[in-house]
Length: 314
Ligand code: PBG
Image 1 (tube, helix red, strand yellow):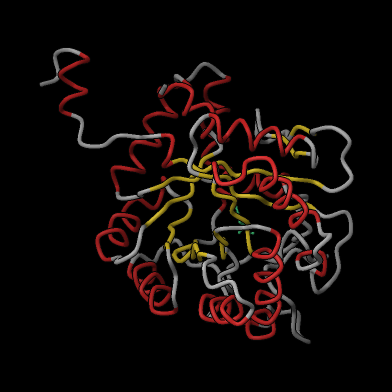
Image 2 (image 1 turned 30 degrees about the horizontal axis):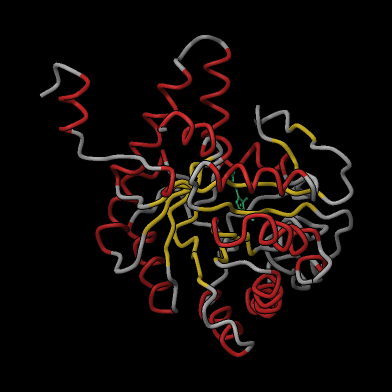
């Protein structure tokens, strides 16, 4: 059953389809042309114009959606630009909706780290720690602003306890019952987010181990996913992907809702760096990594390779 390409194709247990791929996209306020991200070859910070181009390319490629991240010009302790209707992420959402309409699912990262001057995913208490419950009120306001701006799916990546229930309630009260929640349920405090720090010009000096999960814990990832489902999550996610395939498989097996995974910036960077050195075959490594994430149980994959991979799949 392995002898020819046709036999292997027939025997394949897992397929990757463009509709299951979601492209993460960065939009930076005040740019006049796209700016490359050194640690992420081929990935740029977009302008409000170039984000329209990438949205129409993603729609033409048949991608499932794009996940937008905003990089504001001005940051403060509360991350005020996140729920400002004129904030960069909300303006980008509206631009993407205008460009791609219903051909693409417009999604937004719902977190504070890109918008705070201290770089944490929540507001801080008097001791400099993240104040979980005060942060929930900020997430509620951001959720409503993002839904108004046109997001169909909100990606709750902040890892605050109770964030899914809080955001669900706020959306429903504001008349956005149809806006879906993608819960970054099993999100680990990972070194593999390194290049992302440059992508969003992160102001963080410490780490996120006080609220993101310990990489040592598998059972906890399954429990976090179950909690998010009970709070109203429409989709659960495991992140990063490649080093957490065991967690992903277990979450996917137990989850009554779709399970996605995020192939994060550092996973992509390792492939790019090794390929640039001629140490691995770039296309082979990309295809193998994404099919492995699908095989482990992810029904959709957020990946910086989404557009390129969709092109190869044609
Ligand atoms: C938080 C967020 C992060 C990523 C996605 N959403 C950074 C973090 O938690 O430190 C990382 C994505 C990547 O590395 O590609 N808003």
